[in-house]
Length: 92
Image 1 (tube, rainbow, N blue to C red):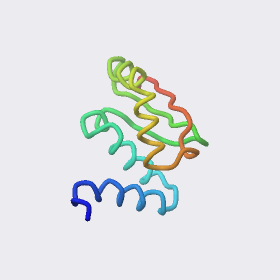
Image 2 (cartoon, helix red, strand yellow):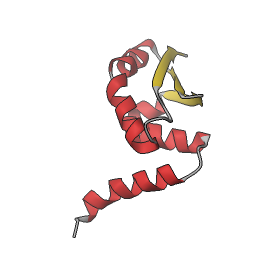
Image 3 (cartoon, rainbow, N blue to C red):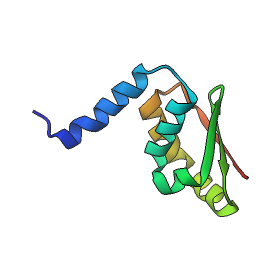
Image 4 (cartoon, rainbow, N blue to C red):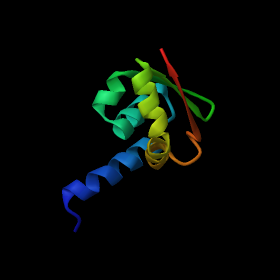
């Protein structure tokens, strides 16, 4: 039997992948991938398979760009490999 702390992430992934693609689903996955501090400083939307990220400042845009490989990997594990294939970051 798995401890609950190990079972919850897998359950979240299964729930996300089973739900229809929507802006809310993408925003939830973004928050799970980057954490609440970074989520509060950004606005995201999916255009095709490209995630468009508007960052509140140049510093946040730089941080997201620097971490985009890791963020993309997390998003793909939550949403599926083909849902988000690239991240495009700009400063608001």
